[in-house]
Length: 104
View 1 (tube, rainbow, N blue to C red):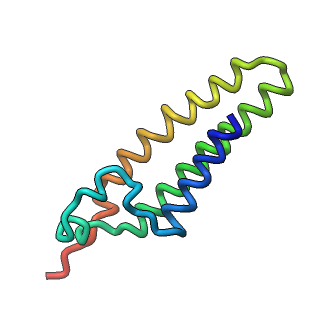
View 2 (cartoon, rainbow, N blue to C red):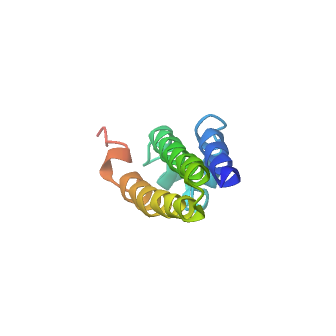
């Protein structure tokens, strides 16, 4: 579980601060014109924040799992992080808030 949390953290850092925007699904296949329609810096910030949230939930689940000596708590934490984090990321990043405004 700690490895999973570390992967979430590394992905968030790489995309936001390393500008590995092509790790974002669909972005690498867009044309330059399509990419220009999106504020990728804001999307990268959102991605980092969601990945950190998922990492924190996973780490907390791991700690609680060890404290209570119940492996199911860790499993529930990863499930919770995934079923809340990924849909939020997908819905939010595809909203109009992350599209650039036309200045015509």
